[in-house]
Length: 129
Image (cartoon, rainbow, N blue to C red; front, side, top):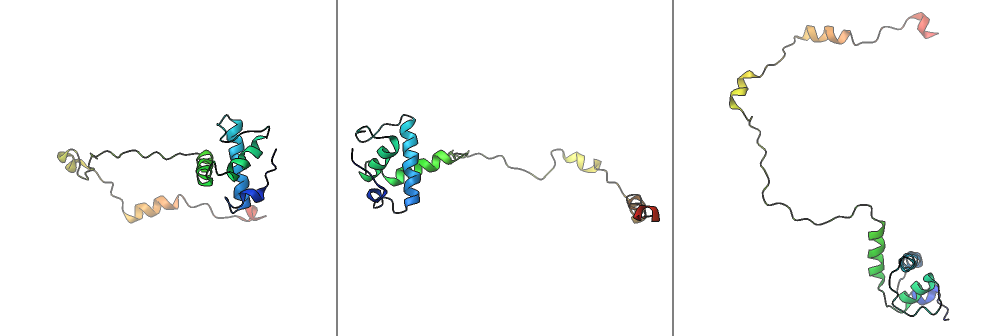
């Protein structure tokens, strides 16, 4: 059994932390049943994944893309947009309905009287204690 270290893989993936992420993701894929691209030689899944990266049987870019897709909660699907889009018109559907619109008219005094009822009552001496 050949000993695989991080130094064997650093020339393929420069960042050690990214290498650990990619190798662990690949090890999980192998555990889930993904085919192995090299001989196992009684190695465990993390060692097999590091050996695959060191032997360049898998590209780090493919592993990175697969890792990103596995972590996404929403996968975007490119769907063709429909050619015909219904136009929205600002004109009313029934032209006769224009004359039937009723507006409420209120004077400024009526508005102020209505707002006075919404004002909280003044604070008394009993409330301040």
